Length: 424
Image (tube, helix red, strand yellow):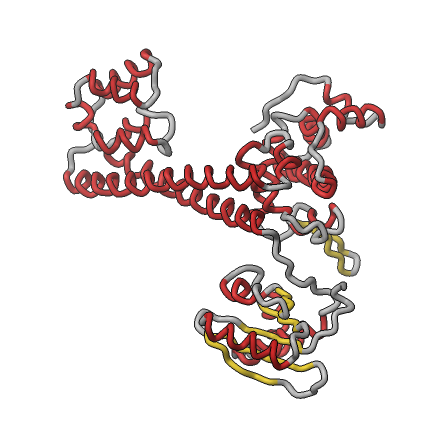
């Protein structure tokens, strides 16, 4: 049964909020509309949903709301008689501004606007079909991990700026602040004075315990610490800075442990996922990008009718605007940013592991494309291939693809003879 053939017993528009939800309902056989408010409590939502089931004899009911994910759609997803239609909140806001140029707004009016949009565009809206459990787990895990990584970057930036106030020499004592080595070093020796009072054997043993075995490297770091001069002796700077270092190191340590736990959970879910093979086979995807790409595509094979659909959804396909004699192409603004970020970042990484990706990138650069534009175009090209692999559940075969390019006498073949270049 397709979405065009479904006969709904009622149509519902919901304007959701943190504490309550305004609802506008119209039964299919009635001309009048009903308005009510349901509290955001599991018991209240369950009571309302079951009342609808009894009232309409279990027949399907279309429910339109401004959420693709969130607490309300999670609460309603378990009721099989409710068919959910998520819509973009910008669509509601645009319709509201058209109807009320004054800017007047109310939750009741918004619920009715949402119902009107459902009635008007029902044939063009797609019912929400959740991915399977493992895919939804993976989607939540990779997105949460990315948020935590971004938080870690903010913490390391703040810690770097703080160390530059009083102990810039510390930044030369390790390659990366976002490591247990850096956290442990700054916990034991948070200032230049602490480090200079430590025994050389103590510092050497510390580096050995953390896996640093280059004796020349360790000796150079210790010599630099011994010869260093304190940037400031002002207690007005040192006391607050030392406390800030202690706080930031504690936060950073928790973030690093959290990222490691997310990596372990993502690897476990990805390994058990039935669609893991096509994404694991992608050049340069690895443990980071393969799960993110799988999460972007999902498990519903009917979600995207073509490669063009996923290119548009991910924000990789550009937008063409035409008005009168003017026509211009620009970046796609409305899209899931994390999905686009995942695909573009992986496309850039793939050039290190794929001759075809490197050749395609070079051909675009030779045509005058900037680096970022060429990487986006490569991502656009990759999505065509990845869509086919996803649909057929087959791994990507670089040798087979290169053979096909040679058989077609593709212009890319001439670029494959050159040495591989590692681009920034």
